[in-house]
Amino acid sequence: MICPFELIIDNQEKHPFGFTNIRAGKSHWDAITKALVAREDLKAEDVTYKVETIWDSLGTSHGDYALFGFEGRCHVERKSCDDAIGTLLAWDDREERFERELEWLSALECAAVVVECSYGDSIASIRQYGTKTIEENCRSFSSRARKLQLKYSVGWIWADSRRHAEIETFRIFENFWKHLTKEEKTNV
Image (tube, rainbow, N blue to C red; front, top):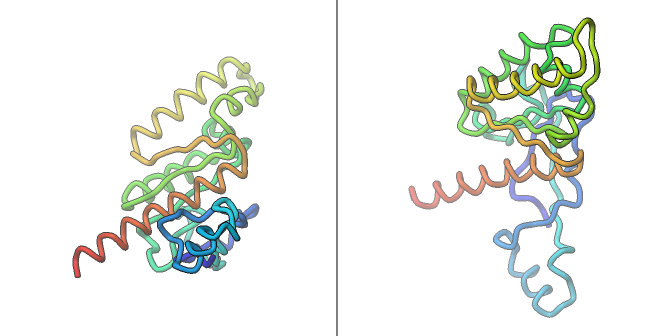
């Protein structure tokens, strides 16, 4: 089933999500799909979206993904587990760029940071760095994560895996798109 919206992948994204095999929500099934499921020619879990993606520049510090046609309204920043740790612990001077990004994202109607591992897995992956012990880095990581979420009011989703992060990212865009189309119908 064709997804009713397209997603932009920033052309600087090094490990993009493919957005494949994502189950379609029942509310978006067309009449043919509903008839096939009703006749049991097709199982509900077999109905997946074909998500169209566009590679384009979203701009420096504007996230990794956006809803096409609604750029500047709904964006997602993807973080691998290692990148989330390094960014929150300010390794390799990432802190300043990330704060600029969070500041920009916080002004949007819909924005999130999606991390490809659970919070617990990220804590378990922290190592000693420079003169700081593992324990010191764990405390700094937790403190920094809380402070950034409060300061910028951008939601963070800690997913259990890369696949889970991909689905969560898609669902953010799907929910925002549903919100927009519902709003559009009530204004007509």
